[in-house]
Image (cartoon, rainbow, N blue to C red):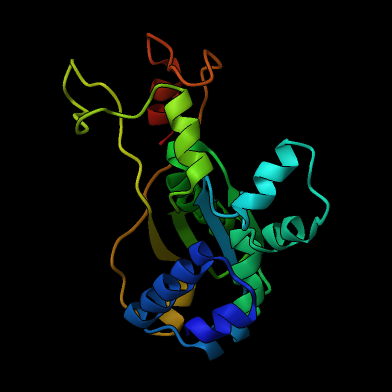
Length: 217
């Protein structure tokens, strides 16, 4: 419901996320009453979801000309995990993951660990990002934007193309699934998270972090 999103003063990114979550709930056969009666967590991966609600404020802030700081408050309110937990009145653990390209996958992995620790019964997990002017400028400044089209497996690749999307899944314990007689679409069998501490944007030439994460998974 876009109007109710506007009532919460959600930015466009979180409006997109609510629409996707509602679709995920419908596909899974999960009702709002079920959410209120169970321990439901929220784990969302993002890079840009609540960086700014007002580009003009951001520009003024960096020029040290910002007088009204209310846009910053609205930005903090649009933290995706907090916004969703508030919108659906959920009582489980919540966290927003900002880990670049792996943020959405990390969110699903962390959601799985919450279930294993019996912290909740269901987790709304996934990733979301919007294309914002400052995000695009940041990638451009790093020289990462392709001048043509992305060719990720080509030795002559020259960069990436950023876009926007949202993907949400419900990660649910087996006990909860059987209790509500739900349908299982897939099973998460392993997850690994590691770093090689080599460079802010370049992986280790021997892929040490990648190898460790794969071994853990």
